[in-house]
Amino acid sequence: MSARGNPSSLRLFSPLGVAVAAALGSFIAGVALVWYNYRVLGYPKLAWRTAIAGGIFYAMVMVAAAMAPNTPIVGVAVLIGQSLVAAAATRALQGSAIEWHVAHGGAMHGTGMAGLVGLGVGIGAALLLILVGNLFGLPIGLVSTPSA
View 1: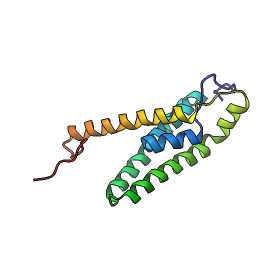
View 2 (view 1 turned 90 degrees about the horizontal axis):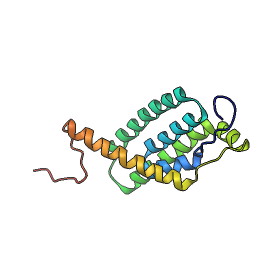
View 3 (view 1 turned 60 degrees about the vertical axis):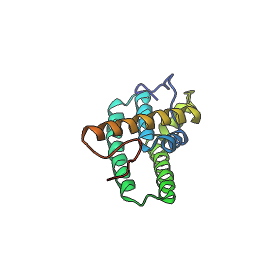
């Protein structure tokens, strides 16, 4: 619902959509969709607070993933874990507002759109990470090179 109590003419993303975005674009993509939902619902300050908290959690996940062994099992566990956390957080934070929105005629984005947004956000975040890493001389790049 918007801040005035009417469903917005804009579409929201469902918890499943947020999970799909997180699976395809990392947890930060899920955070972006939760941020978007809060904006549509008429809560811009809450959107930014949630984005900051989600960004901090994303950084913690990335540090933990970097410290974990680089195996397929760990990669799949991180992927599934961040998707489940994104869906559960969306349900807990916005579930009743999303249900109200739909019950009063509000529209929802499909999971395909959520996936596309997730891919876009994930690619953008990866490129930003590479750019920042290069600015600070961190060994982050598209292709790893053997050390001499």
